Length: 67
Length: 387
Image (cartoon, rainbow over all chains, first blue to last red; front, side):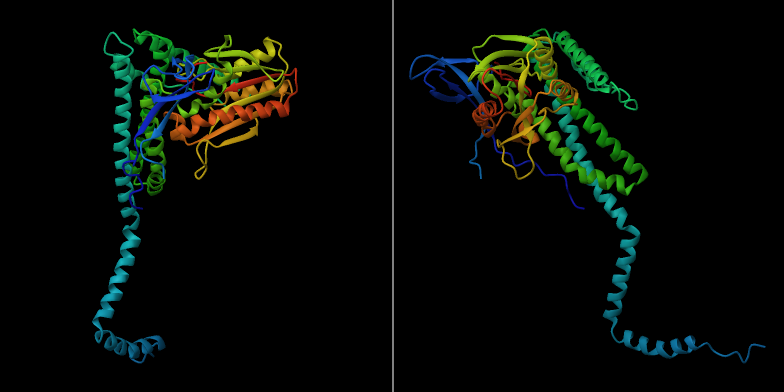
């Protein structure tokens, strides 16, 4: 009967990252998401083999460790 | 004439008992008060209990309604800000946005169900075309990505506007008619309504900056198969690429990214089969699926059938093609909540894309043989996911 509307959400802050992957050597680099990033977009040169890497994933992670 | 009437036995009994009871009660005033209190409480509860519950329900719903109003206004403001700042709308788009929020789509009559799906398709397509045309006219920076994001932001604002209106309607109706059951039902639904509205509002943040949402796991998975291959437009907002896997020819379909499109996978699959003359041995669909409470986000489930949500038009078209041509339909699903599906893609979901591709390869190997044709469709909103 009493308050059933949830109180303010206890959300943890989400940080969004882009993962660049080298299609040749498979080296993965994780960096902060930048506006304009999208999956399959060309990224920077691979630090390991120098080939053109590509954004393979964009995802969010909680800033708090998940319980 | 009444002087010798006999006394009734019950009166005799009561007259003999009453003095003794009175003596006992007067001997214990607290017991009497106790009885009176609980009898009073019982009568009060009986007479006013419902009214008290109605009072609490109205308070609860009122608080929820205030939240919904704030959400509705925030989403409207975000849409206007996006149109002005990113879309570079030449004038003040507020009035046009307000008109847009109240625009209605009238679904066709269902009393004669024959051909109903085509009618729904027609109405929905008309509406989608109208939205696209209006948004394109509204913004100066009318690139496909900006227009598609604007469309999605306006859809969110429209949905929140509608939710607020419907809840307010039942709140006022329940208050006016003092209808206990209307208010209690609404009060029970409020937590779910707030949760879904909150999810919609959170989606705005992802849409504004073009981040992939959880629903985009299908497109993310199939984009791995399409990278570097020649793409062609196969239906409205939908692309296809041809690739190979262990001697099988794969026709990979997804919405055209990185725009916030869902495309027309039903039309695309029908065209591959009927217009291109492909005779697939299997149609494999990859989509996000709503998890049940207790299920893990990013878990993969396999099944049969058309894995696609929405109003049902696309699902109908795919089932029609598959049934008519006797092509088995297989589904690969990635579990997630409604909040995760419409907000920025979580790590667990994104990382499931590798497992999805492995599952897809296993299904292809198990269900088809070398030389076969297979259609693979990545279903979902492809915002932030190109190919």
